[in-house]
Image (cartoon, rainbow, N blue to C red; front, side):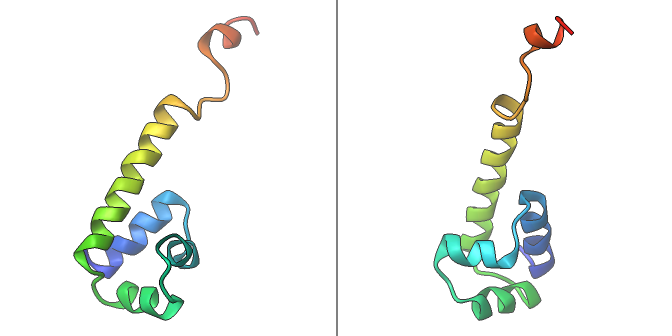
Length: 73
């Protein structure tokens, strides 16, 4: 994962670099360096897992109205 790919993953999640800092308990300067260069491999794995969970959440949990309620309108 490149720094650019990391920034894209954060954008897809709707996270800022500060959000990643809090979640992984790293200093903001560390994450800023990763964004400018390449983050460690474990960051790519972590963000990949978070993206997969986010996609599952959007698919199965986030819909606001069940299909049977939408048909009543």
